[in-house]
Image (cartoon, rainbow, N blue to C red):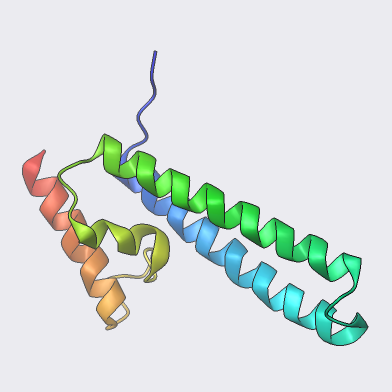
Amino acid sequence: MVKKPTLEEYIEFGRELQELDNRLVTLHVKVSNAIGITKREGELIREAEKKLSKARSELEELMFSHYPELDHEGCYIFYGGDVDNSEDIPRPDAERLKAVREKYNSKV
């Protein structure tokens, strides 16, 4: 049995992956500045960033295969915007996510 996450679950995945990515990038910069950019420990954090990025990209591809009716706006689920507060934050990304939700929900 193939499982299909809901669009809301994909939105949650995207938000979590954005947060993790931001935290890893910040940590990598801090560690590299503290011990040197060529040190193994910093490189291990960079490798974690790359693996997280690959997982994010593959989940996005899976989402588009599950929801082919999503246009390019679906990219904002994994790569932009604050999903949880999309109604409270007047940012273009938040508005686009709101539009994705409305567009998808009108087709269901």
